[in-house]
Length: 281
Ligand SMILES: Nc1nc2c(ncn2[C@@H]2O[C@H](COP(=O)(O)OP(=O)(O)O)[C@@H](O)[C@H]2O)c(=O)[nH]1
Ligand SMILES: [Mg+2]
Image (cartoon, rainbow, N blue to C red; front, side, top):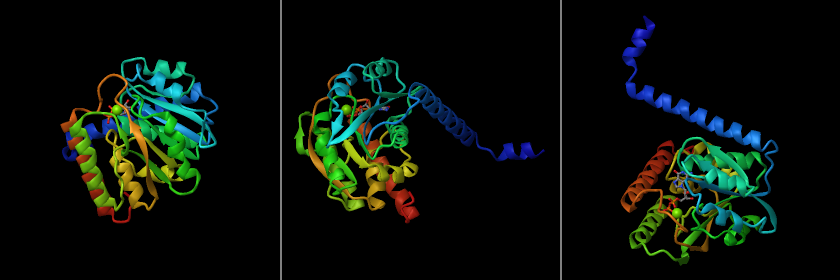
């Protein structure tokens, strides 16, 4: 009657969690298998420009067309991770001829980026740059983003709309960017002005170090900064232009939802890092 005893101790909740975890593994494996079939030679380039895209059929083609084939003097390849969704994002990415990995189910930007980091590292990247699929970041600024890493001056570069130009008009979002940058700086001892910006460049060694330590499936920007800062990687920032979304609305929820989720990620990641105290996070 061992099973009976076991059942008595098992909470329905933990069974659900196990089921979801198993499905996740299956979904990720499925995406990797499909990618390996379509790209048997997974070699990318020294610079990999990584985009996680969720229902961005209308915006992605222009973003992809603007990505240069050389960044800071190094050959560059583009990798799109299509994060499920119902529209033609996967089709337009494939039509653009870039490396495309398609998740059959929407897992969230953090999960999609982790898969992308993994594929970029497997593809031989020495530098990985991430930018949004909605036209808010300008690929023409990739040189400026990547150069500090090529020069050996930084391991992690974050774009700053506050040092550059913010062309959007949402005052609440602006105040949030300021507030959370201040909070994050206090926690990780940095002087970053726009720590929630998703336009970033990383030395590949840093990504390999961070990858097993990242947990956030959606609101991931603060987690990456906190873990990288705690691990002692050198973080710097570069001024960039923050454009309005080319079309459509933010997929991250309204300002209140976004703000609360962002705060949750800062506090839980901080607690995780502090409690472990050895930055294994
Ligand atoms: N992979 C993935 N990307 C997402 C998801 N939601 C948003 N994104 C992408 O993340 C980027 C920023 O998202 P967006 O909704 O514009 O957030 P905002 O710019 O902070 O308002 C865009 O490239 C979106 O396509 C998601 O669930 N999964
Ligand atoms: Mg956006």
